[in-house]
Length: 168
Image 1 (cartoon, rainbow, N blue to C red):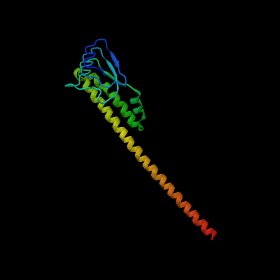
Image 2 (cartoon, one colour):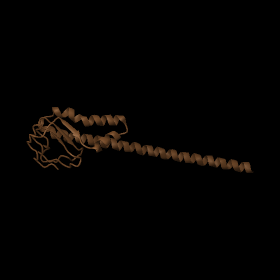
Image 3 (cartoon, rainbow, N blue to C red):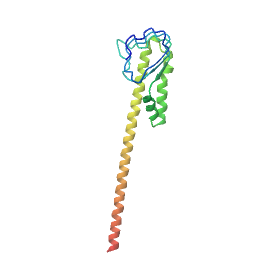
Image 4 (cartoon, rainbow, N blue to C red):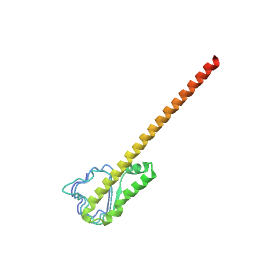
């Protein structure tokens, strides 16, 4: 946890890299860090705590780059089975870095939060869609196996009848 106002107005920070274990960043934690340009944060829905408004990175005029920390995110994107999903997710994760430089200084945290929620929602959507495709494929495979088994039983039945007729 990064406490409220922990680094407020810190002039020494130009970049920050958090670990995947970071749970929350409280309001005003990095507000008015004039030299802060880049942050690396975990992709978590409730990373920013709320107190009247989201102000964790507000008034950080130079903040223009957000990267996502962790193998979990990279593995999730690379494991998406459809190339179109991977391409869209890579674009979505890079979108903040085109948008943030033009975001007013007092709206940086809200922009980052909305972007994170959008990325998480899209990932959840693709995971659900992937689950549906896998479930459908398993059902088709089960039907094919049943059909093969029935065909095998029919062939065995015909062979038995042919043997009986040949023995009679």
